[in-house]
Length: 388
Ligand SMILES: Cc1ncc(COP(=O)(O)O)c(C=O)c1O
Image 1 (cartoon, rainbow, N blue to C red):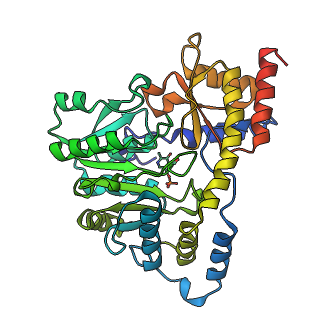
Image 2 (image 1 turned 90 degrees about the vertical axis):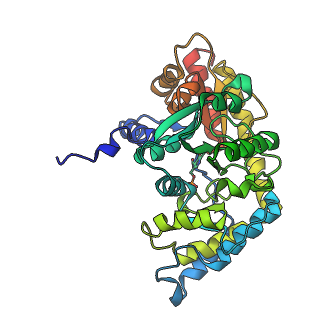
């Protein structure tokens, strides 16, 4: 075996990648594992979106390489979507960069802005990719803690006291995953001011704003935010298109040009029919989001029942595609309870520790399974507890 590059040293295989393998092995042995872990929507995209894709594929002129910054129709649709739903102005020519999912954008931003030795503020708990992409650049991770007592918002004053001279990027993610904390205008205003004072690039990762969330919020609804902030968005969650790989990066043109310098060396544009279908998705009427949320709201009620059964505590005002809940004191960690439900009831629930130590006493259940599966999970846990 030829040795891998040392930059991979700290980067482990993605937790879900190994766990899904284990679940597949259990299933191969005949164990009917219910996977309530992963946030990949089970529902299809809108019919018009699929029709647009199917129609576009039959045209002869769609099969070549596409431009590095997407077709103009897609950039315009993203800008229009931001104006309509987020109340934020973006210039479709320079301030919108379509991405193959927002996850790739994390890597592009890290590669485009970070040097070895720079510091990066990463949320704990938080989406693991923030840490992984920052690590790959050789930057130093500085965790900031999110705590239930602070309503899952960082303590910016404490961070400032610590000294931020070497910090180049702060990753934030509101509405937050995994905690379900909604976006908060006041906090965002403070964060923009903090980024400006400390010359930090503030990157808000915003893929969950359409799921069980009241008003959509963009960091660009804050005056002056474009000087210091970037925002990622995605069609994965709100449009049931996770496998299509469509996201976007929004921000000031000169920042996006820097990102494009890296990205244009990585890929050669997105398949045009996918881009045209994405335009259709971005023009979805309010009823699309309402119908989607009606399904998630129903599922969430059953997930609350499942957490009640497991004697976990949760806030009912959470937003996004998951429910986040605190385990009872008698367990050493959430891994213990997650292993118990997996190996004894064949129900996989994500242990919050994979999002960082601050998640160590929490579990996360995804709302992306058919309602009947949550009922089945409840029956299995009742059986395990001897209450059925
Ligand atoms: C917080 C967060 N950011 C980004 C992503 C990646 O989304 P995409 O499918 O757009 O790459 C996810 C996916 O689970 C996520 O939870």
